[in-house]
Amino acid sequence: MERPRKEAVYTDKAPKPVGPYSQGIVAGGCILFISGQIPIDPESGKLVEGDFEDKVRRVMDNIKAIVEAAGGTMDDIVKVNVYVRDIGLFKRFNQVYAEYFKGVPPARAVVEVSNLPLNVDLEVEAIAYLC
Image 1 (cartoon, helix red, strand yellow):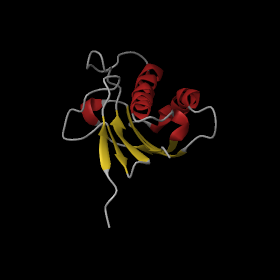
Image 2 (cartoon, helix red, strand yellow):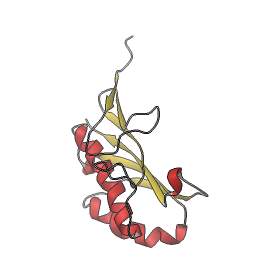
Image 3 (cartoon, rainbow, N blue to C red):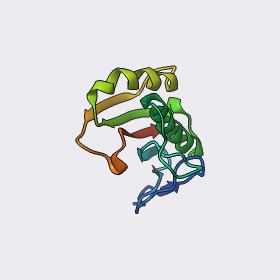
Image 4 (spheres, rainbow, N blue to C red):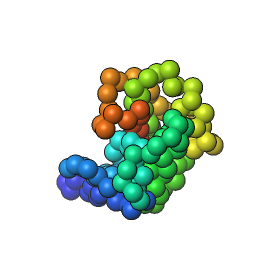
């Protein structure tokens, strides 16, 4: 029996990987796993400055760019994992997050963590179903 293929997804509209990982992987032609995104501007390669909401928008725009590069939309996202350094930012996160999911929102977990890459405030990963 032949194994389902996996294909890497890359787009210039999201930050380049800074390690041995792909922006996203499509497995079996239908499931897209999006690597954790932090608030890096893909054009400059630098962390986004400004308020927490600006950082959330950058992360969500990065996720949107990757899902679109795989041929999907934000409506195809079925699961999201969110890592924040301060759970007190939960309400502010939700206000921006809701802008990206107008229909049925995906399943989600939000976890407070002690630290994240480059000392950022949040990291978000997602899974989309493209079939």
